[in-house]
Amino acid sequence: MSPYSQLGLKNVTFRGKSAKEHTPEFYALADVLLVTLRKIDLFKNALPSKLFEIMAMGKPILLMVDGEARTFVEEVDAGLFVEPENPDDLAKNILFLKNNPEELHRMGGKGRHFISRHFDRNKLADDYLQILKEITLRRLNNTTSAQNNF
Image 1 (cartoon, rainbow, N blue to C red):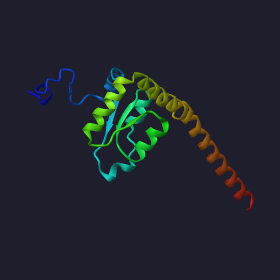
Image 2 (tube, rainbow, N blue to C red; image 1 turned 180 degrees about the vertical axis):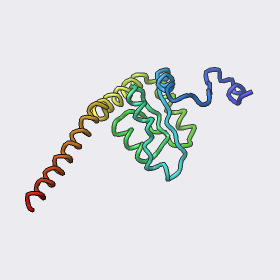
Image 3 (cartoon, rainbow, N blue to C red; image 1 turned 30 degrees about the vertical axis):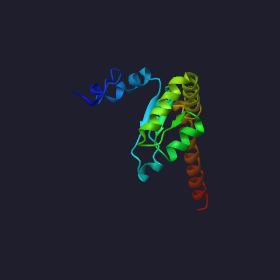
């Protein structure tokens, strides 16, 4: 018997590992998604990639990671910071969002808008191609210039 059934929690299911390709399906089912890392200094510079996936799906984040990730989520206004390893703070923020569904929608929309503006794959690919063209032209010009000096 799991500790969750002992507590009488009928709306909690831990499914274990699932294939990465199923992640968007699980994200789509959620109203808010939790991103958590242990409370250690090593993670203060972490920016979990799942932040970008969650924001792209228009889902708000409850972030239990301090440091760079917290700054990012707060600047975008895509979720709420929860003190890592603090279950009372987590419960408080879950209840806040439960009682303020307009905040879920607003923060999810902010994250989605930010990702579509700054991390569109086609735009990033075009930008990268432009950089490669500029580097190639510079090298060609430098090679031609060097050959002309001989």
